[in-house]
Length: 394
Ligand code: KIV
Ligand code: ZN
Image 1 (cartoon, rainbow, N blue to C red):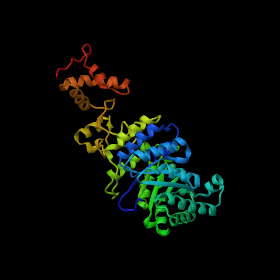
Image 2 (cartoon, rainbow, N blue to C red):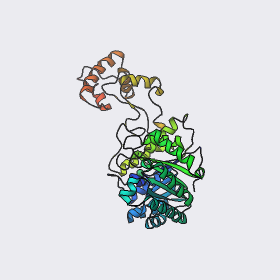
Image 3 (cartoon, helix red, strand yellow):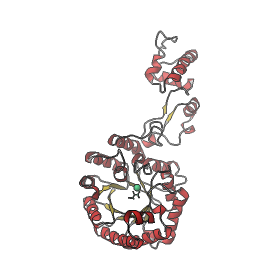
Image 4 (cartoon, protein in one colour):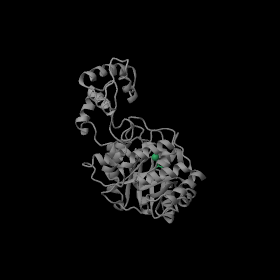
């Protein structure tokens, strides 16, 4: 069982569960296994490999991950139902360290309209299910689905019951991406102040991105007392997705002056993991995606390129190398200046004098007005005989 350490953030990856259950993200057995090995190499502490009761395929994939992947604790999701819990237990049983992750709604909206049970019935289910799960695993996480839209007094009651029944991690999901950073931090503070025995429990943040605040909310959760963050690679997940693991990890690294915590993420594996996920599902991330997007370390404008050439800190808060994303790119486009153009041509074996640079630059800006991106081949084309510029000799 993971024990609470106030200075350490536990990373819980749910790419293969919350991520996989969203449109375009279905993966088959071999893809899940390959990705699970990579997620383990990334250094996550807990890997949620699926939802065992969902299908025989899911159960088999979780079992394969539990048998073969070493490093993280392997988890399966289960609703608070006997058959779910037994399937989850069977699925994670082969792992040297495992977890059963229970979920039950805590908001009246979900209890009344989705589950059609009363609050008291929900409390009974909580206690019974946690006890049953504990009979299979020493490590049981309990999630209060729709926790951020729940009556705080009932939320506290449900968490108290779960803790008394033996839950070892308590997760407060922002299931519909509704909360704000300030509110989310306050929920964790309230739980820490009011739930007996909470100091022996790891509190967990699980945020969806419907209002674009999943990462900010996760970090606020940490400020409020959460010591586990649940995230997915590239932020995939239900609807607008989950908190992106690479963004949370990079924020903890870049702003370590503010977040004085350790974690086990191997930052240089962030980009390779993002790339591998994109190969396994139907889409990659957008070019301007933070940390792992194709443009995350690319600079086109002349002012920025000059700044970068003078000192990379001018326009970069982390290096691409630190997250395994290759090197800074100075991209040539219509906003680029003479200096970057001359620099690139020199790297291509064509050092030009000042007049030549002026001439090529004129041709370059004409081309850049017509063409969205300019590659090395285009640049060399500007030096061809027949154009006004003679080929420069190295
Ligand atoms: O968003 C959610 O509420 C969930 C739970 C199953 C943890 O994914
Ligand atoms: Zn979720």
